[in-house]
Length: 447
Image (cartoon, rainbow, N blue to C red; front, side, top):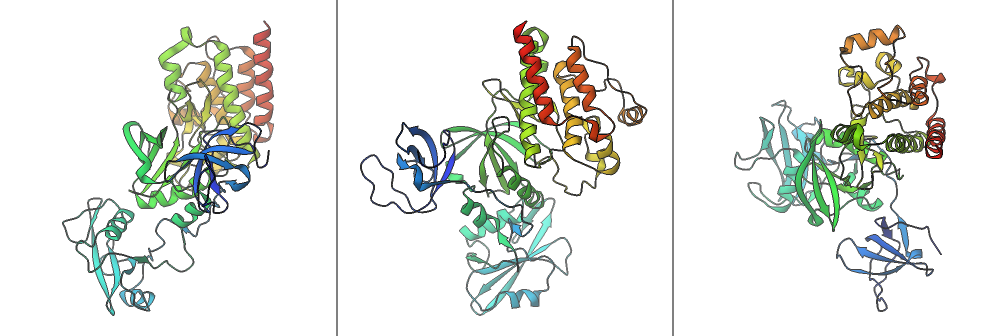
């Protein structure tokens, strides 16, 4: 069979035009997005669904490529039209030659904290002050927006209070449009196919909603603040590079209302709640070991890709309908790339060298994994019970380590302790942890 073998649900991009299909085949244009439904036995063909039209049909594997990974490029911008602090005069120069609807946004020099929308119309450039009040933006005190992205989106559709509809953004020199790059690589999804449902979680940066995208149940993170959304773009780029059965799968992004990150839906929620609500009576040791192995395998894959999680904890492990544990929020864990604000670190899960010297590595992830193992075998208890954060840091340096949870197999406790070696180099790799857990499972099954 030509091409790779793509499992159902894989998003692919078409390599060329195919406008005269035979019966049962699908018509498409180069660069169209399709979703694999199933492989057609031994033919080198797939049954696919066109993401735009929703039509289904057959398509040759040779006509498809999988979506490309996006480089976490600092020049990639959700707001390429945002020029920062430039004067009105500089804005006028940027918008030459005049063209109706050519526009940019700048920071107001006269009114710090406000913005100015600069629009070319006729032979002039008209400057609209965008007033920033209580987390909203407005030009005319009639129409309010939660961020600049929303405001630009609105005025590209409707003229409203300004001289003309916005037609063409003038990008800041050197900036690339995230929208174009995401579309080119095949990660930009279409808002009209998304139906949003109930809120299923609330993160630090926005709500997580349940939804449906072209008939598939999905989880959607909505990040409204444009500065945060821009920071999340680099993190989302990390998610486009990875695909593994124990990592939550990114389906794509939608640029609307800030940023929507669309992921596979994990029906049984996070691991902490899963264990707390079921407990010892319902979850046997074998299942605990399987969860631990799932996480180790997902982390081994991330380690092989040189990606560091930084916030590995049972709350960031999600459980599928089939009881498969998957690592989530990798790459999204630290939006602040410099990690400058140590107060945000989850102290009880973070390795001593990461807390003290901001040294994050796969070995600091291994330390966190040891804490996660303790969470699993204590059925979702919070680690270091009864200890304050300040005490934890001090005691760890003195060599203190948690006792094993009640009923925890001695071999598993030994594994936890190996993850908590003070010297990062002495901790096992995720590959080693995977091997040991596989051995433990085999031993349990052989009894």
